[in-house]
Image: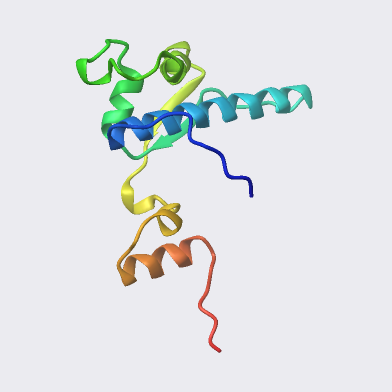
Length: 125
């Protein structure tokens, strides 16, 4: 694994989700182009699941909000793709966020549920 300095510092959770969504959008479009080169049809619009409603509204609404004016222009690529119809933002409920098991401290019952949802099982020693 290679460590890399983060390109930007987010000032809020919605901003970090928006930036992560932008980076995921870049990867999705890159993968779409590779699949097209292999003559594999890709269904449009591409669905991007985000669990932060503020990040979703920023991506869908082209009006520049006062709270988002400090977000660098390069991260509005996500908004451009939504407006073009290439990408569809879908709200993902926190309960269905499987990555939380890797990124957050969880209560035992939630940990066990997510562990089973990603296909892991407890091994008795």
